[in-house]
Image (spheres, rainbow, N blue to C red):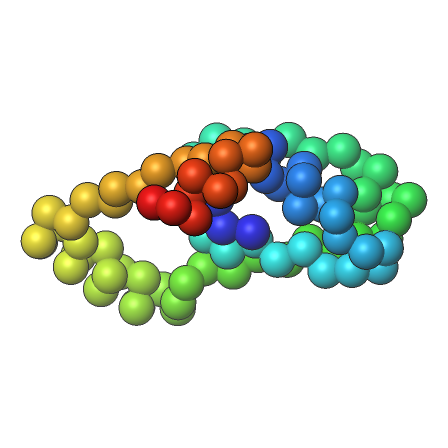
Length: 87
């Protein structure tokens, strides 16, 4: 999972098979609420990862700041998936 759309985390956990692994890449700006039943009753493991080691991440941040790179994205709700495909 790599998104700031918080409901997507619950959706991702809900569709994960029992005893599965839920991988989080990056970090959300806000805390991620989740039901503990996924961890306790379904035995789902959650692991996280940055996109690189600390040195690479620092270089990437410096490059973004130096060139004033901005993140531009559009979020679509699941019911608008066809609109997303068209865009």
